[in-house]
Length: 328
Image 1 (cartoon, rainbow, N blue to C red):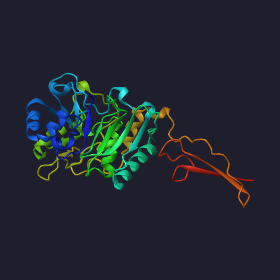
Image 2: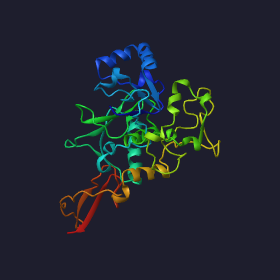
Image 3: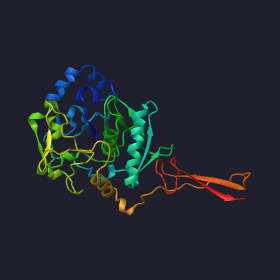
Image 4: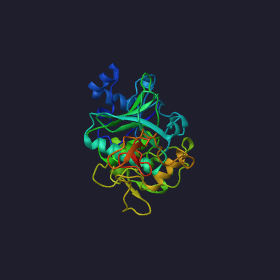
């Protein structure tokens, strides 16, 4: 079982878990007992629930579950996934959007996709019947995404869930970054050189969201610390008293995290992870259509569409089409 990540879930136990079996459905209906099991048999690291052997053998993709026990020497808490098989092949992400998503959520998804494509070599394309694996962006009860490309038994797709409070551009962008394989910036093993975590101000239920990763099991080769990353929690995230939960050492008053955009370092991380320097950074045109009939003004037209969904190829109109005219 591989990891998933939740963005600022207000109730980790009752809203994040998405039941896909009778066992999980039972847990969901018996939250008090489930909470007790979590407290006695589970450990929480960052935004990941670490399951005991009770759930390790399940084929059901549990909310935020990664299959290692407390105290295990094998941990998957990295800034970006170290397993290259969890990255998207050639940086291409086939996807579809649930039609039931509200208009605001769909707009935010399109915004995030356009932004990432305009800055990097990552390409999102509407999924086709021939795609062996794709992403389904759905409406759920909370905000979560698997970390990287995940193969789920008996399914051709993996989900990105957007709950009622998850429709903003920043949250959707954050979840799509998880989808591409990126973890939270503030859980870097070296973060204590750059920020102070104010533990007394953190809601006790979320203390483990702020634990740093172990440098012996992490790979950080993606540049200097990024206070402005869209993957960095905000200054007051999960505060129990309205006071900051994190502050920058060099400037305690500065903002942390981005609201609706990628930082320059976010962009560089994506480019480095997906080897964008060796790939095309613009969309590829599809074939030209046949020439149309000659019009009254002695012109005929044909068109072509950008082959990469949502990519605006050079000289394209907003909808991705290009029109060519010639005398006839």
